[in-house]
Length: 105
Image 1 (cartoon, rainbow, N blue to C red):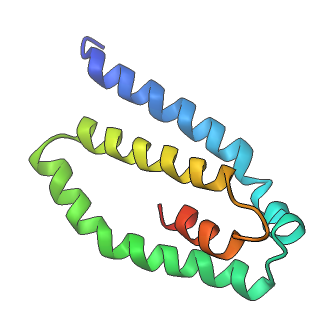
Image 2 (image 1 turned 135 degrees about the vertical axis):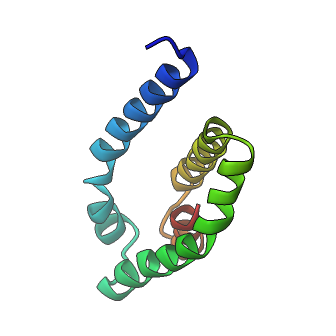
């Protein structure tokens, strides 16, 4: 490939997904054992976050079409970073609010 930006984008995306899939397997145990969430909360939060993502898909797609996939990917990675920062400060006392923010981001 001669397109260096594309190669960089693919590499960043691959590394991010690898790290994400390694950590995501522990999220259920964290919700149940550390935060003390019920099964209902563990079900409703992802459902609500997916509804929000469905509503934002079209505006984000338009942004990517107008400006570029690289800019959209950069913004998405920043939002992912912010979500993990929020998750780092999520403890049982603020878990319901902070985890909701994390899962929406």
